[in-house]
Image (tube, rainbow, N blue to C red; front, side):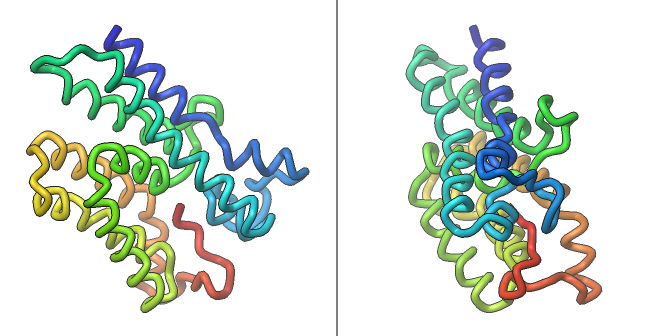
Length: 202
């Protein structure tokens, strides 16, 4: 049962909603903008309505698997670890989807869904950090990196377990790895501002 839940979480996370929404609108989002299947690129190519729809669906990819696992996994010593495993697998699925030859998004929205279930309070803090960073810097990637990097700290502040903090550290590390090209552009001053419609962080 536990292995099934982990596999199912990965497969749900791997659903390329950005690509599907784009095809529904008659556009392959991989062929325009940043080429990313996340909500930012969908919104840039198709408009805010489609971008918001993709964002919601990508958040649900993280929220639904861990929510279902919480219902079906019996209480016990391994309950928390199985839930966290399902959350991690959903994010990994979004980043490395088997349906797209393991070329996926950057995991921010799906991670948001996971931790919206685990700690809404920490998510609220992180959203404030993200919004502030984007407003000040003009870069969605900078907001994503700062928010994900600080998220384990907010989990400790609100009193979450070491296991949850460790899971957040792992997911944050994966998000930073997926943003390595953005990090390079931020460091050399060539990253494009969201105000110019060029950033591709989510």
